[in-house]
Length: 247
Length: 233
Image 1 (spheres, rainbow over the protein chains, first blue to last red):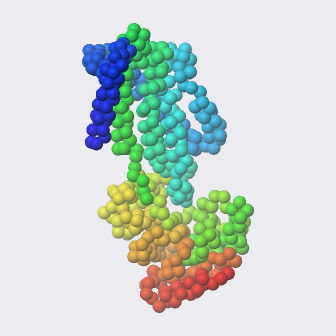
Image 2: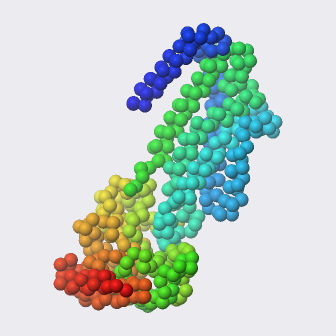
Image 3: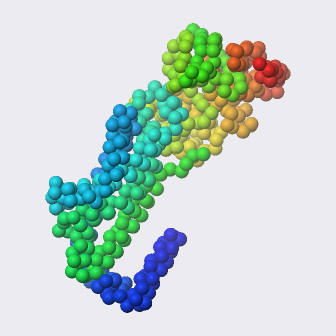
């Protein structure tokens, strides 16, 4: 558990730096609240934070599930058909040039203030990393494996499903690991633009009322949840999708 | 499969000739060894028989092989499938019902009955190549194409694999592509050297295969093959 020890050490280092900045500059607590106050706020507002965190996490998890599924299917479609590839790839690349932040108001306009505008935002943000890492892995399938399956009399569809997809699952896993870190960003952007629930909404609200301690509390809760989610997905990938490279 | 398999013609990739005016006949139910320097097109010949020669323009006549079985230098085992599932890969990719009992028999034949549930990375290189042999046997084809299947193995394992493979593929039409004169002398019932100017047939011993490494006729043929391969063209 060396990773855990390093994590705790790094957290302590940040807390010490944070407190030192406050002591040396004498900055007002509504600009930068001291760590102890933030900890106290987290404890005292635990009911409020839990309520909003639950909403954000629901958006993140649903977005993650749908985005990953969409990316999985798209990558297979792209890998299977040169025509689809020629048509869709330029669109995908172009879509990456559009700043996602700019889309948030439109999504809110189209989908309303509820969960779906945030879920859609999350899907948009994770779709590309999942699709592109899985697609790259699908295109790197060992040519000799495909040749062997052809000699055995396999159809292209069965080669895809029984050889290329399982061979590319580690690539899908690395896309998923990226997606888990990006997903909360999508949900928060969505909540900033228009929401009545969620950690993003709470941050904006706290900021507007100069409750910086609550803003920091929400931020820390979000960060901790993201790390926990990342750890969980990482474990899941190690157990199911990853495999040791064969020499 | 009693008709001899014949390939006559020329092949090129993107306008670069690979071989020209080749005339190769595989005798049914026997082992034909194709020797030659690297880059002379041995593997292209094998890939043409396998129907895998993408990007190769072949101009000539090639007998219809039907479905063949193939074994390559790499074991090509799927690392996510157990040894048993790898042996049944053909059925899996064709969407047929896999015959578990027959697959287990194949594993017994190659001496890996106790390893059926392991994953390939847990096996040694020699064991993995034996699984590949079991998978090839499982396909049960009249024609078997072997593309330097033993060249990545250490000398002792290679000798054992040559014997096992020869025993288990008796009676099939085999094309063995190799660069090892000793291997050709042990296993070839017809030995051909591929050169840029065509095929040269070298007399193979008459004794049954697999032949003993120390047998006089094997050593004589091996020397013959060395001489032919060294001869300037």
